[in-house]
Image 1 (tube, helix red, strand yellow):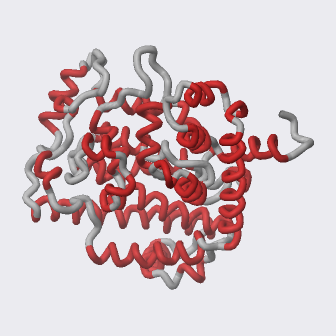
Image 2 (image 1 turned 90 degrees about the vertical axis):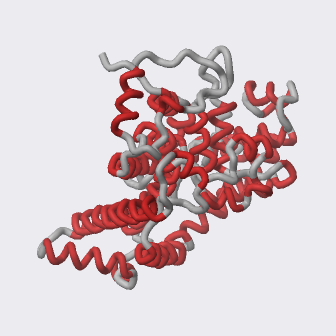
Image 3 (image 1 turned 180 degrees about the vertical axis):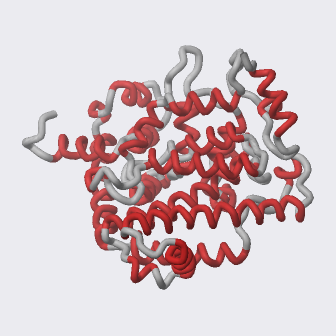
Length: 393
């Protein structure tokens, strides 16, 4: 049997010197005896997968609401795609795949139903109490809201996995004074860079959602191929596919283009990152933390191509009237739900009402936690129960 200690020794021998090795983890908030044949990061991964918040990702929106079709991505399918891409990159760079996977699987746990429209609404509703940010909410989920153990709240994940959840987005670091509670700023050292495993996950997230939003956009009819031919990276990839295959069904051709787009970006990322590691003289994990900029980055030429693609997606897909209409509807009924609960705590489930009665946190924060944890389907059903007189309670 391969023991945890043997796994730790294999990591020491095979991983890069700047990888985050499980043997040297900063550990968990609450002391626990570690598992005999799983590393601390493998155990984190398993705890995340078995959490209620992870299962709810199945019915949380990326761009398309769940009832529009079962062939569109959800937060869950997106999370699995991110984990796959991130593991590939980590393995090639000799980083810790288990830590990368744990962070990848947890990175969207703080997302609300109906995507960014509802996040913006909750941020506005909570502006007097610190606002709302899905990275911080993700940490609240694993530290407080999941209740799986008798001796402590949360999942009691390792420091490194928790750091990855809250620090994977560089934009959060730039606005840390306004957004991040002081206790988190101090604990997670926001003046330092996160692990390379965290940085890998962040870029894998971008690759995954850009690629699958193209796929879903084409399936929905909100994007069309003729418009996409104006985008250089699409045009280049499509040309390569046509050179290799003269006759292809339309759906298969699109699949091959998307697959090759992912491969093109991953290959560029790995090559440019290796150059950065040499350029910045990264020898140890401490070198990673002390570096002045992110190390896991695309080449300048790929950044330019991706910028054009993302501008195209924003203009044609994310600003499409169907997406905007659903976003506007979601904002309105989530706002209504928020004030219904705020005006009458008795309408909340007992465990949330109890938190308000015990004054563990403010009523608004408890209500925010409740709404953020909803799936699209549950939020719609709650709204109907309150506003449709013919709907059963």
